[in-house]
Each structure stands twice: as structure tokens, then as C-alpha cells.
Amino acid sequence: MSDALMFIKLAWENTWKQKTIWLFSALSIAPQLLFRIFPIKPQPSLLVLLLLIGVFIISIYFWYANAIGVPYLAYCFSIGRTVSIRETLFAINKFSGRIIGFSCLTILIFVPCFLLVVIFSTKNSTFPANLPANLFLAFLPLSIFNSIWDFSIIGFFAKDLGVRKSIKEAWTLFRNHFIVLASIGIILRGILQVINVVAVCLTLLIQSGFDTTSLSNLNFINPSLSLSHNILFLLINAVVQISWPPFTAFVFILAYLKFSSAKIHP
Image 1 (cartoon, helix red, strand yellow):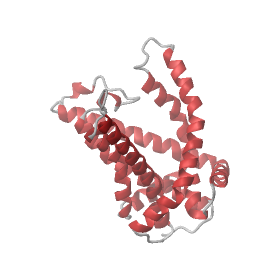
Image 2 (tube, one colour; image 1 turned 45 degrees about the horizontal axis):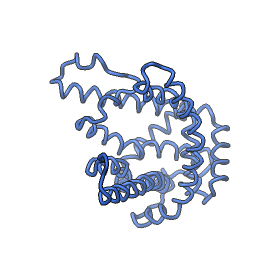
Image 3 (tube, rainbow, N blue to C red; image 1 turned 60 degrees about the vertical axis):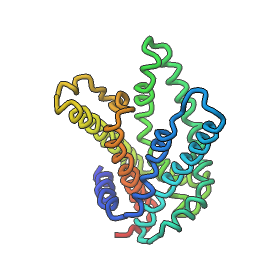
Image 4 (spheres, helix red, strand yellow; image 1 turned 30 degrees about the vertical axis):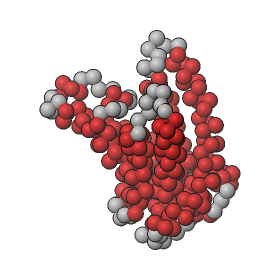
């Protein structure tokens, strides 16, 4: 447990030292902004449909630029290597194929779980309203395995491994250091849940003139569900979405560097 807390403490400190990482982290909210600017309407014209397809493609690129750029910059900073934006963009292009392949494998693993939750939810009279909460609860235990995703991606950068070898190394590290890595996953999931609850509470209190009765119907399992179209909440949540990926990337990169006996930059 002490190792887990040490990684989290050092990651929090490193998050504020790397400046370029915030640019790529901000790309995580770009798809939401694009679809708010270009909302999907029923029976769109051909021109609007083509525009939406373009927005969708751009959104995918932004997602991958965020998914690759953030851990790549965090990794380089952690080993004491300075990289430019241009080098980061080159890395995104270089590793995008492996990230796409790895993402497809991950989706194949999660699809059966998703279908089981949907089937279970349909048996309840509250379907489909109960589906988001059921999905959240079903995937919550999987936070224990978060390090496998991050370690696999780090393997691409650190050792230029292919998808299969990187996953194998990630699984070996996870298995050998299960208690620490599982603890990190649980702690981070708990921290994020607390942040989401605080963000929702802050939104409700501000909009109600700090009337505490506005919190009486708060859904603590999935607090953001009822505020998915609330502008104030989306602004507050955007701050979380931008700051969370660098923090978690540093946590798992520090763990990877220690457990793989690599040199960590002080």
C-alpha cells in the first residue's frame, strides 16, 4: 500500500511539471465540443451527413492523439527526456497502429460483458433507465486491471514492443505485483468517484443558490447521469477530464519504471 501511495504522490507532483502534456490532454474534450457545435439532427441532408462523418473522423483522431500523446509525454518526462510537440505528433503516427490493434482487442473482451449487462438490465421493469447504473457497477471491479492497459501502451514506447509482447509483459508485471497495482486501480477509481460527486454537488449548489435540499436526490452511484446536458457541470467536468489523464498516466508509468527496473528521472 505504501508503494501505491508513493506513486500517487509523485504522479501528482509530476503532473504540474510537464506543460506540453496539457495540450494533448485537452484533446479529450474536443469530441464533445465538436458534436455540440455540430449536433446530430434527425434526417440530415447529404451535406450535413458528410459534415458529421468528417467531425466523427476528426474526433477519433483527437481521441487517439490524447490516448497516445499523454502517456508518451509522461513517459519521456519520467525518464528525463525532453520532447517537442513535433516529436510527440511523430510518436502518435508511429504508435497509432499498435494502439488501434490493442483497442480492438480490448473491445472484443468487453463486448461479452456489455451484452450480459444489457440482457440482465432488460429483465428489470426500469429498463432502459437502469442500464447506465448497471454498466457502471458491472465495470467498476475492472478498475483492478487498469494497469494492464497502461503498461501495454508504455511497452510500445519503452521497448518498441508489438501488441502481443507488450500485453504479455503487462500481464507479467501485473501478476508479479498484483496487490500494489490492484490497490492503485481501486484507489484511483475511488478518487475519481469522489471528484465526480463533488463536481455534481458543486453544480447543484451553485445553481440552487447553495440550497442544500438540492442534493437530496443525488445519485451517488452515477452522479453525473442527471446532469449530462447541464452546461455548468460540463464546464466543471471538462477540468476533470483534462487533468485526470496526465495524473493517472504518471501513476502507472512510475509503477512500470520501478517494477521493470528502469531508471526513473528524479
